[in-house]
Amino acid sequence: MEVNHLTSVLGADRPGPKPRISQNGVKFRTLCKRCNNSALGLNYDLAFNDFTQGIKSYLTSSIKLPSVMYVSGKPGKIARAVFGHLSAVGVDRFHEGDRSDEMMEWFLDESLPMPSRLRIKYWVYPYKTQILIRDSAIRDLRAQDAAVFWLMKFFPVAFLVLWDSPSGYEYPQFADLARWGNADPEAEIELPIYLNSVPHERWPEAPEDHSFLLYGEGAVAANARIKRRS
Image 1: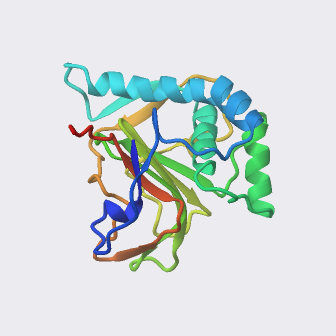
Image 2: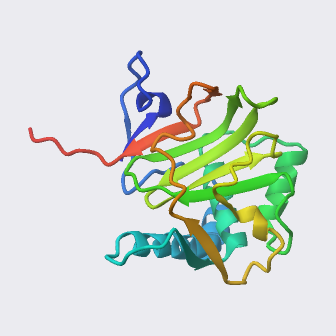
């Protein structure tokens, strides 16, 4: 994969640095062994992969799909996988405090309900570019406040993590893993996939006429590297 800062795919005028090459997918050497191997690799990622592969199997089939389809999944584990992988974006990014401590405890202890300040929206993403954004802000001029968000997008699904649910950023057209935040982590639930609510490829990371966004270094875009003949 060729990994660039997000602004390189948003049409920024100034050319960015040379892309970083990442073998076998986008990787960050930032998680400890316990989180990466035990929590993610041997637990949450199994449910996460089953869910994404279930969506992919529908999208790549020849059957006629309804406006709403359902894919079986474990929302508590899927949500923790999304949070764990986005936590890996960037180096030395952990911040102590009420929010960080609460999220760390929830990530490591499956008996805890999802924190009430957290929303994880998801939708079908039928595009090739992978997007990973951590600790960014969006300001919709039609809303009173800004919203802090994390974002993960890859074929076939996108996840938008929103903090504290400010008014104007509800996005009711998408399903929300927080709906099942108190469910048993081992429970298999039929999770809805809304096929009539697929936004354009650069939503929400590209500013619109009524919004602007702020990014840090933890905002990257990745595409499959094109092998060039010598």
